[in-house]
Length: 279
Picture 1 (cartoon, rainbow, N blue to C red):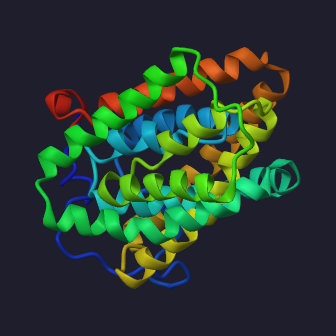
Picture 2 (cartoon, rainbow, N blue to C red):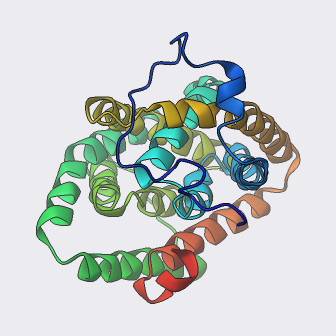
């Protein structure tokens, strides 16, 4: 990129708190805070991520976060993406309420919310390199299991759903890669792609509430985050609309292939040996 993150104001140590209605911050100042080339670059990445989110119901963070964290603070990228996705994806959530299987979604959410703290504890008290290799092995194993044709034929019980959510919570607490366990679980069932997609949309929407509260308490919603929203919200909204339209016309097999590809992407980006490529 022609502009360094420091030049764009992303890597400052002090972050003013998020005050979107402050008279000191005009819309012109917000849009002029970032170099145009950087805004275009981030808009392209975010549009691709939004199309995937609209189509698959998940996966946008796997695309946006590895790229965004190379040009801004991880806390800024994570807070901006959480706000954008939570706001713009609300129409997806409204439709998913009627389409998802609540008997398996709610226990999975409960498991994730409870065990994300265990993941955070592991992150604080364990060797990070060992944890990342373990995550890579788990995600890769789940992908190979799905590609092999294995299916979970039984109806998901509450304890099984809670357990899968717990694994997702631990992985999320360690590395923010919580998707693969629940994606693999619901993809391996006999459910139609419409139900699988709705399950994932509701799972991530409900599980992100705790993350939002944690980000507020830690002061992650800064002025830099609001500045990014000016560009990001309309781009992401258009992308989610395009992805949703694509899903309504796509063959069910295409959904499964895209989901496999996103799990593979999660595995690759979590592999320590590839850090020079992704970080």
